[in-house]
Length: 68
Image (cartoon, rainbow, N blue to C red; front, top):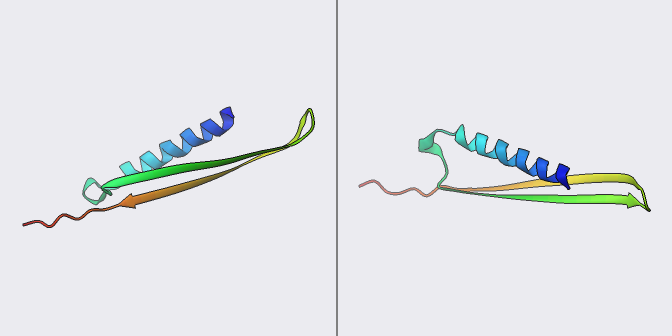
């Protein structure tokens, strides 16, 4: 579980860095980030096989205000 949480933190930091690299005038108004993890383990008393899948869904919204 610690490994999974480290992965989420690492993905979150990369997402923030990517957004910060967008020029302020071009940045989205809102950003929503969803992290999904699927942890699997197979075996009896000892884990003989383990795996992890990660997904990252990012939604960005731009609201254009008319300049008058």
